[in-house]
Image 1 (cartoon, rainbow, N blue to C red):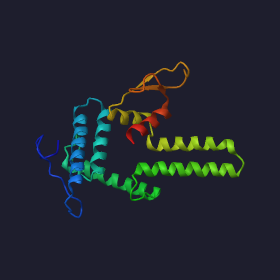
Image 2 (tube, rainbow, N blue to C red):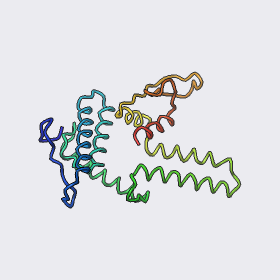
Image 3 (cartoon, one colour):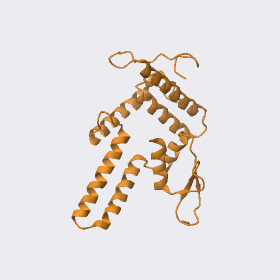
Image 4 (tube, rainbow, N blue to C red):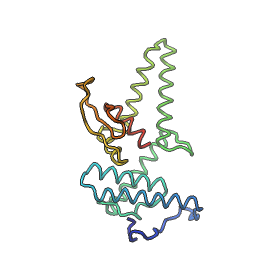
Length: 209
């Protein structure tokens, strides 16, 4: 629900910084974003699980920000005005640092830029190995870089699980008879295929990207 509006009322959308009225397509996209973000906050409000609640709030905030909506228009569970200011400041700082570090182009998202940066780093590592005559090391370099990139995006496996859950995808811990010492999860929609922690992070990338 949007703060100050009853459910079902048409929300009053804020315009951009130049107060340029959006065209029909942009307005329709904003209205869709309003509904999706509000649904995420409703899920968070009704959830009994902290991880699910936090993931739903994060997803709602991401949707709202991507559409250029003001977060203060929403009734975000457990958030007061000071929380909102702190979150906005932290998000803006993080976004600016990532954009600067990744040389984000105008038509790129942070996620696109991160994948581009990974591909560039992997290619550079493979080229260094090729020039040094260490062809076998190229695959190892690429794997290490990929794991570092995944850890950067999903510092813990629980972060990936919560992100999947926010997209209505469940990951349940289980056993793999072929890898008895490896912790694995089974993901809804992928049958009996076991995922280790790295594959689970990759699945979170795929589902949430």
